[in-house]
Length: 173
Image (cartoon, rainbow, N blue to C red):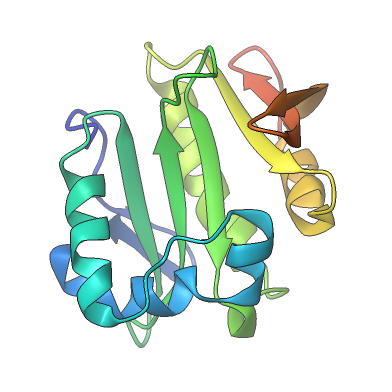
């Protein structure tokens, strides 16, 4: 985990906190949604017990941060925002995934904007990227709304990916 990063965020409707070992049920559900499998990939997590080592690997990785997005009023987990330094990218990658029931309600924008605004204020993160597959139009629209600019298409492990970027000198809404 990127230990120097802020642990918790609060927005109008959401509480955003670091992933915890106790999030096995939520992670199991999230990674087995059709959207996750289609746009992010199969994680072979077939039970809540399988989710535990997956979470432990995330928490033990110094290049990965997962924030769980919960509804402020009920503390129901609805999605995640991630910040990962991937070997094949020059800069840290901002990502997000939400349960289908909570898509289309503005939660992804609200959570990602809260985290992105914070990250871009940090001296170390002047450039941030995001990667998606071309067929993930919802992510493409959200990245644009967040202020990310399309850079290029590239091939990674036989997948065509779109690279977007944002810098501290860009204005975003």
